[in-house]
Image (cartoon, rainbow, N blue to C red):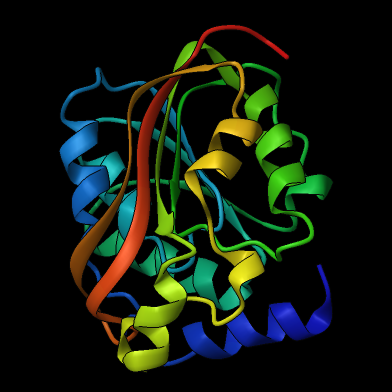
Length: 210
């Protein structure tokens, strides 16, 4: 991961206020209630709002991000909520999680550089147990029109960093999709996700190793 990318996120998370708020993402919250608590991984977890929520509901939580500032705020948020999360700083390719370690992986606006996002999905797949679940929400390729019209909604301004349903199916061929949709939603998450946007959402169960 290059220094410019790391510096960008350290700068965003260095402020006192939480960039995306302290409350969990609505889709994650809704989907976690449908699963028995177990082990869960939060990639690109930033300031920890989703990881802390999962820990509060009984999950054993691991998380990672490239931002030291994000980790610092996540640990403060965990302390405030009297929970513990295992949070590592580093790029995924440098982290050696145990194979088939997790019951669930939550990819909630887990923004990776466009040239490695599919590679990261393949690596993450190795860390999920057979029959484990991925919960995913991120901006779709249609979102480029929304962010052009309203910068407050946030999200990438280059279409390569956004997602399509076909890309998702290609990245996760060994999964059974419980649901998979492209949808317009209203976001109200902290400073940087505000307004209408277009997202890809899915819940999928791993049926086999690649």
